[in-house]
Amino acid sequence: MTLTIKIKHRSKIVPLNLISLVYAFFTYNFVANRIMFLTND
Image (cartoon, rainbow, N blue to C red; front, side):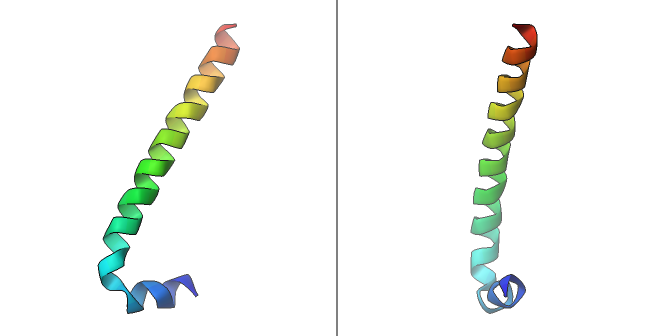
């Protein structure tokens, strides 16, 4: 389903990917900082 939607709305692929990348980046940083805090403590 997601593949057909991406093909139909090609112009939306880039913004959605950028948003997901930024979201994943911040989530990774949050988790990494959380792990560092727990291990340091």
